[in-house]
Amino acid sequence: MDDIRNPILESIAAAREAGAESVIPEGLISADSHVTEPPGCYLDRIDPAFRDRAPRVMTDTDGGDVFVIDGMPGSVPVGIIAAAGIDPRDIKKGETKFADLHKGGWDGKARIADQERDGIAAEIIYPSVGMVICNHPDADYKQACMWPITTGWRRNSSPARRTGCSAWDRRRCARSPRRLRISAGSRKWASSA
Image: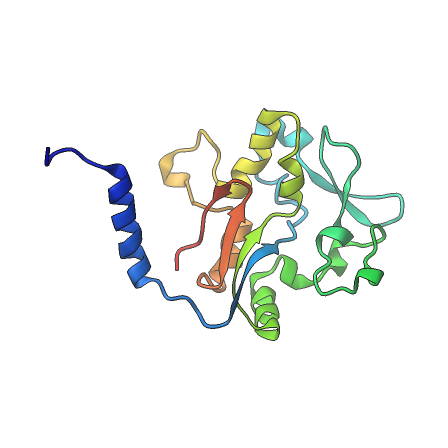
């Protein structure tokens, strides 16, 4: 009987060992923060078979930038996915350009400055446009969009190329890996502390 493995008990033991070395920083931890995906994050990393349909930023009729997601009705105005710190009366659905958004929505160094100002010790960060993509009716398209964002590598890539996070998020987290943790949709991962 001693040679029978119990994976549940092994997982609990491993979690205890990992937890013993974890240091939670002082201050508040935001468990529901959102990133503003940069304009090329899907287009640049999606499986080439879906590149012509990749979510992309376009200029709307009102002059503002929007993410257009193939197969989804309407568009996602960047002004409503990057509204942190803005008085709700001042949030514009349209007319907002990506270049005018607060830099902390997509730049790790600026995000740390925002955390300092707000007294935030760490964050769990979710995608914004990616959460809309989770409702896409085409499962293959949805996976093609989410796979490079959540894991940073294509399904058929070699193990040597598998990075654990997308290139733009890796740069964001590298600024302070103990304070910026990424969660994308249902596939969760975190930068190494």
